[in-house]
Amino acid sequence: MFPEVQGGGSLIVAWQIRGKRVVIVGGGEVAAGRILNCLDADARVTVVAPTSGLNPEVAYRVSQKQVEHIDRLFEPSDIDGADMVLTAVDDPEASTRIWKLCKEKRIPVNIADVPPECDFYFGSVHRDGPLQIMVSTNGKGPRLARAIRKYIAQLLPRQAGAAIESVGELRVKLRRIAPGPENGPKRMAWMTKVSDAYSFDELCSLTDEDVDNLLRYYALGSVPQLDVLLAMRGNPDLSKIDVFDGSFGFSVGA
Image (cartoon, rainbow, N blue to C red):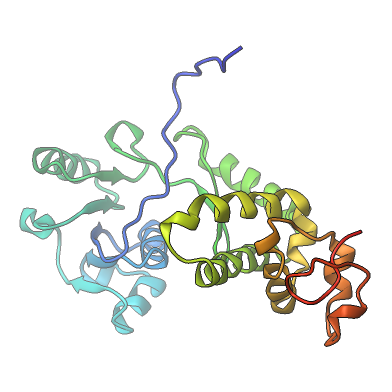
């Protein structure tokens, strides 16, 4: 009756690190990927590595002042005030020292390529605007995770990210016309109807005009069929559409 417990997994969450201080030790290829992930999440990134050890991408981030750069080898004081620490250096002993230091200070840490010394893992992520899909093998097969992520991405509609933007814009506009916590249950129920009424491919095809027209149905608590919504495009005389609801002066559903 209930799902079976499958031990050995990780709790996959979306970690909000906007404005948080993330210290990244190392300046090579792995560090470059970590830096980009953190910048994409709007974190404040500090890179600790000698300039001579920076790869071209990390050097670019430094030159563009996208990150703070400490031009030397790591020192314990570098993680003071850090919210997260990531290491990506080819020195197992140094990495373990940093891991132990983070444990003492209760700072979440990821030691690249050393799963036992990680509070969390980086998965392989597909990004399309607001859409993020992460595939994790719990540290057992990073390259396999990348292959699975690419396979999933190929199956998604081209406008997947745009569809999510449209739904997000619909939610924002809905709050404007029905503000206040007392309207929360009705808003949620109607948004559920919208999500259930259209396939994901259909949601991907919605335009800004469609979103505005869709909002006209909120007061009724109903959702039009897609062909009705499409018929409303560019039609200034909505009364010609073969439906009627009485509240907005145009036809809706028979």
